[in-house]
Length: 222
Image (cartoon, rainbow, N blue to C red; front, side, top):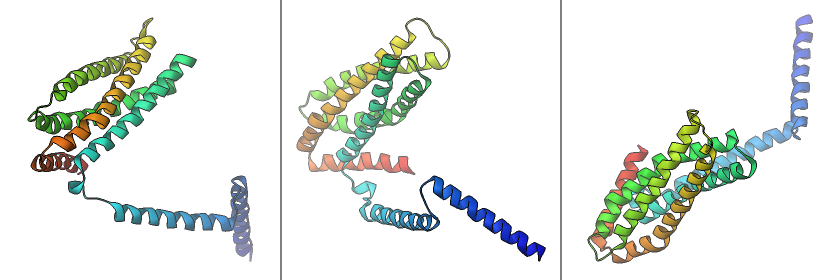
C-alpha cells in the first residue's frame, strides 16, 4: 500500500512539474501533442517537397549553380558589412569580430573554390571567342583577392594579439574594401558576363561547361 501511494505521489509531482513548464511557455498538455504532431507533418511535407523538387546535379544549369554560389557569397558579405559597421559605430566587440572572422573563413574556402571553377572552366571557354572581358575580369579579381588577403591578415593580427594603434581601423577598412569589391564583381558577373556566356557559347561548349561544373560540384558533395 505504501509503495502504491509513493508511486502515485511521484506521478502527481511529475504532472505538476510538467504543467508548470508548459504554463511558463504558454502551452498546455494537449497543445504540446498538437504542436509535435504539426511539426512532424510539416517536416514530412518539407522532406517530400525536397525530394519532389530535387534536381540531379548533372542536370542543373552551370550558370545557375554559379549564381547560387554568388548568393551564398553575398550573404557572408552582408554579415561582414554589418559587423564592420557595428564596430565603427559602437566600438570593437567580440561578437562583431567573430562574425567577421567566421564569414571571412567561409569566403576563403567556398568562394575561392567558386573562383577556381570559373577560372578553370568558364573563362577558358570564353577565351576562345572574341571577348576581352575575361582579361579585365581576371585583373579585377586579382585586386579583389588582394584586398581579401589584407582582411585575412587583419583578422589574424587581432586573433593573435598583434594589436597596435591602427589595427581596428585597418580591420574596418579592409572589410569595407572586400565587401565593395566582391559585391561589384558578383554584380558584373551576374548581369553582364553570365548573359554573354549563355549567348556566345556554342551548344557543345555549354554542354562541356555543364559537364565540368556539375562534375566538380558533385564530387564536392560526396
